[in-house]
Image (cartoon, rainbow, N blue to C red; front, top):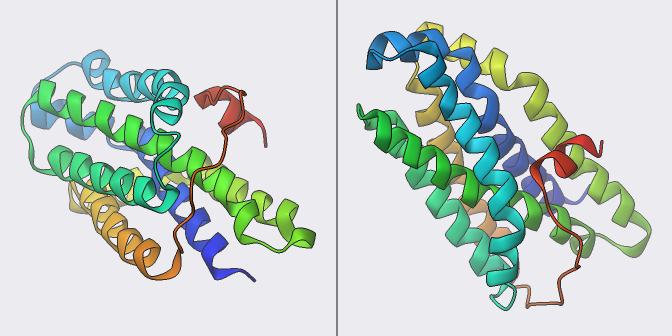
Length: 200
Protein backbone atom coordinates (compact mmCIF):
# COMPACT_ATOMS: atom_id res chain seq x y z
CA UNK A 1 0.00 0.00 0.00
CA UNK A 2 1.39 3.41 -1.01
CA UNK A 3 1.45 5.52 2.14
CA UNK A 4 1.71 8.75 0.17
CA UNK A 5 -1.49 7.96 -1.70
CA UNK A 6 -3.20 7.15 1.60
CA UNK A 7 -2.01 10.50 2.93
CA UNK A 8 -3.55 12.32 -0.04
CA UNK A 9 -6.78 10.36 0.45
CA UNK A 10 -6.89 11.33 4.12
CA UNK A 11 -6.44 14.99 3.21
CA UNK A 12 -9.18 14.70 0.58
CA UNK A 13 -11.45 13.20 3.26
CA UNK A 14 -10.83 16.14 5.59
CA UNK A 15 -11.49 18.70 2.84
CA UNK A 16 -14.66 16.95 1.72
CA UNK A 17 -15.93 16.78 5.29
CA UNK A 18 -15.71 20.55 5.68
CA UNK A 19 -18.27 21.17 2.94
CA UNK A 20 -21.14 19.38 4.68
CA UNK A 21 -20.09 19.45 8.33
CA UNK A 22 -22.01 22.70 8.82
CA UNK A 23 -25.24 20.81 8.15
CA UNK A 24 -24.76 18.83 11.34
CA UNK A 25 -24.38 21.90 13.55
CA UNK A 26 -26.71 24.31 11.75
CA UNK A 27 -29.05 24.76 14.73
CA UNK A 28 -26.13 25.38 17.09
CA UNK A 29 -24.73 28.03 14.76
CA UNK A 30 -28.04 29.89 14.49
CA UNK A 31 -28.36 30.09 18.27
CA UNK A 32 -24.76 31.19 18.87
CA UNK A 33 -24.60 33.80 16.09
CA UNK A 34 -28.25 34.89 16.44
CA UNK A 35 -29.00 34.34 12.77
CA UNK A 36 -31.73 32.55 10.85
CA UNK A 37 -31.43 29.00 9.54
CA UNK A 38 -31.45 30.32 5.97
CA UNK A 39 -28.58 32.69 6.79
CA UNK A 40 -26.59 29.85 8.34
CA UNK A 41 -27.34 27.75 5.29
CA UNK A 42 -25.38 30.26 3.23
CA UNK A 43 -22.24 28.82 4.79
CA UNK A 44 -22.91 25.64 2.80
CA UNK A 45 -24.07 27.43 -0.35
CA UNK A 46 -21.09 29.79 -0.38
CA UNK A 47 -18.68 26.88 -0.01
CA UNK A 48 -20.25 24.89 -2.84
CA UNK A 49 -20.35 27.82 -5.25
CA UNK A 50 -16.81 28.97 -4.45
CA UNK A 51 -15.50 25.42 -4.89
CA UNK A 52 -17.18 24.94 -8.24
CA UNK A 53 -16.20 28.32 -9.66
CA UNK A 54 -12.67 28.61 -8.31
CA UNK A 55 -11.31 25.13 -9.06
CA UNK A 56 -10.67 25.53 -12.83
CA UNK A 57 -9.61 29.16 -12.50
CA UNK A 58 -7.11 28.63 -9.68
CA UNK A 59 -5.63 25.51 -11.25
CA UNK A 60 -4.96 27.42 -14.45
CA UNK A 61 -3.49 30.41 -12.61
CA UNK A 62 -1.15 28.16 -10.60
CA UNK A 63 -0.32 25.75 -13.43
CA UNK A 64 3.41 26.51 -13.42
CA UNK A 65 3.85 26.40 -9.66
CA UNK A 66 5.60 23.34 -8.26
CA UNK A 67 2.92 20.90 -7.05
CA UNK A 68 4.18 20.22 -3.53
CA UNK A 69 4.58 23.93 -2.85
CA UNK A 70 1.07 24.61 -4.13
CA UNK A 71 -0.30 21.78 -1.98
CA UNK A 72 1.35 23.20 1.14
CA UNK A 73 0.19 26.75 0.43
CA UNK A 74 -3.36 25.50 -0.08
CA UNK A 75 -3.24 23.48 3.13
CA UNK A 76 -1.99 26.56 4.98
CA UNK A 77 -4.90 28.63 3.68
CA UNK A 78 -7.29 25.79 4.52
CA UNK A 79 -5.92 25.61 8.06
CA UNK A 80 -6.20 29.39 8.50
CA UNK A 81 -9.77 29.49 7.20
CA UNK A 82 -10.95 26.86 9.67
CA UNK A 83 -9.24 28.62 12.56
CA UNK A 84 -11.05 31.80 11.52
CA UNK A 85 -14.36 29.93 11.61
CA UNK A 86 -13.59 28.40 14.99
CA UNK A 87 -12.71 31.69 16.69
CA UNK A 88 -14.84 34.29 14.91
CA UNK A 89 -18.23 35.59 16.03
CA UNK A 90 -18.78 37.67 12.89
CA UNK A 91 -21.20 36.24 10.35
CA UNK A 92 -19.49 37.93 7.42
CA UNK A 93 -16.00 36.90 8.53
CA UNK A 94 -17.13 33.28 8.86
CA UNK A 95 -18.74 33.51 5.42
CA UNK A 96 -15.45 34.83 4.01
CA UNK A 97 -13.56 32.02 5.76
CA UNK A 98 -15.89 29.46 4.20
CA UNK A 99 -15.13 30.87 0.75
CA UNK A 100 -11.39 30.76 1.48
CA UNK A 101 -11.79 27.20 2.73
CA UNK A 102 -13.59 26.23 -0.48
CA UNK A 103 -11.01 27.84 -2.76
CA UNK A 104 -8.05 26.24 -1.01
CA UNK A 105 -9.95 22.97 -0.70
CA UNK A 106 -10.67 22.95 -4.43
CA UNK A 107 -6.95 23.07 -5.18
CA UNK A 108 -6.24 20.33 -2.64
CA UNK A 109 -8.87 17.98 -4.08
CA UNK A 110 -7.72 18.49 -7.67
CA UNK A 111 -4.07 18.04 -6.70
CA UNK A 112 -4.87 14.88 -4.75
CA UNK A 113 -6.67 13.41 -7.76
CA UNK A 114 -3.96 14.36 -10.25
CA UNK A 115 -0.96 13.48 -8.08
CA UNK A 116 -2.10 10.09 -6.76
CA UNK A 117 -1.54 8.20 -10.06
CA UNK A 118 1.91 9.78 -10.38
CA UNK A 119 2.88 8.45 -6.96
CA UNK A 120 1.86 4.88 -7.76
CA UNK A 121 3.51 2.25 -9.92
CA UNK A 122 2.16 1.89 -13.48
CA UNK A 123 0.12 -1.18 -12.54
CA UNK A 124 -1.49 0.57 -9.56
CA UNK A 125 -2.39 3.98 -10.98
CA UNK A 126 -6.10 3.16 -11.21
CA UNK A 127 -6.08 1.80 -7.68
CA UNK A 128 -4.40 4.96 -6.39
CA UNK A 129 -7.08 7.12 -8.00
CA UNK A 130 -9.77 4.87 -6.54
CA UNK A 131 -8.35 5.35 -3.04
CA UNK A 132 -8.63 9.12 -3.42
CA UNK A 133 -12.25 8.81 -4.48
CA UNK A 134 -12.94 6.59 -1.48
CA UNK A 135 -11.68 9.41 0.73
CA UNK A 136 -13.91 11.92 -1.03
CA UNK A 137 -16.97 9.66 -0.96
CA UNK A 138 -16.43 8.85 2.69
CA UNK A 139 -16.40 12.53 3.57
CA UNK A 140 -19.77 13.06 1.88
CA UNK A 141 -21.31 10.23 3.89
CA UNK A 142 -19.73 11.08 7.24
CA UNK A 143 -19.56 14.88 7.12
CA UNK A 144 -22.94 15.61 8.70
CA UNK A 145 -22.78 12.82 11.34
CA UNK A 146 -19.30 13.90 12.40
CA UNK A 147 -20.47 17.48 12.72
CA UNK A 148 -23.47 16.46 14.83
CA UNK A 149 -21.49 14.12 17.07
CA UNK A 150 -18.65 16.50 17.88
CA UNK A 151 -20.76 19.67 17.74
CA UNK A 152 -23.39 18.41 20.18
CA UNK A 153 -20.70 17.19 22.57
CA UNK A 154 -18.29 20.13 22.50
CA UNK A 155 -19.96 23.00 20.62
CA UNK A 156 -20.25 23.82 16.93
CA UNK A 157 -16.76 25.31 16.76
CA UNK A 158 -15.10 22.08 17.89
CA UNK A 159 -15.33 20.29 14.51
CA UNK A 160 -13.52 23.16 12.83
CA UNK A 161 -10.80 23.11 15.48
CA UNK A 162 -10.41 19.39 14.85
CA UNK A 163 -10.19 19.98 11.11
CA UNK A 164 -7.59 22.71 11.68
CA UNK A 165 -5.55 20.28 13.78
CA UNK A 166 -5.80 17.59 11.13
CA UNK A 167 -4.74 20.15 8.52
CA UNK A 168 -1.63 20.92 10.57
CA UNK A 169 -0.81 17.20 10.66
CA UNK A 170 -1.41 17.03 6.91
CA UNK A 171 1.07 19.87 6.34
CA UNK A 172 3.66 17.95 8.34
CA UNK A 173 2.93 14.74 6.45
CA UNK A 174 3.09 16.35 3.01
CA UNK A 175 6.31 18.15 3.95
CA UNK A 176 8.00 14.94 5.05
CA UNK A 177 6.65 12.31 2.67
CA UNK A 178 5.82 14.05 -0.60
CA UNK A 179 8.70 14.82 -2.93
CA UNK A 180 8.70 17.91 -5.07
CA UNK A 181 6.71 17.42 -8.26
CA UNK A 182 7.34 19.87 -11.05
CA UNK A 183 4.68 21.35 -13.27
CA UNK A 184 3.20 19.29 -16.06
CA UNK A 185 0.67 20.49 -18.59
CA UNK A 186 -2.82 20.52 -17.17
CA UNK A 187 -5.72 18.82 -18.82
CA UNK A 188 -8.24 21.06 -20.51
CA UNK A 189 -10.96 19.27 -18.64
CA UNK A 190 -12.80 21.52 -16.18
CA UNK A 191 -12.71 20.62 -12.52
CA UNK A 192 -16.14 21.31 -11.05
CA UNK A 193 -17.47 20.47 -7.62
CA UNK A 194 -20.29 18.34 -8.98
CA UNK A 195 -18.01 16.51 -11.44
CA UNK A 196 -15.51 15.53 -8.77
CA UNK A 197 -18.05 14.40 -6.23
CA UNK A 198 -20.44 12.65 -8.61
CA UNK A 199 -17.90 10.69 -10.59
CA UNK A 200 -17.77 7.88 -8.06
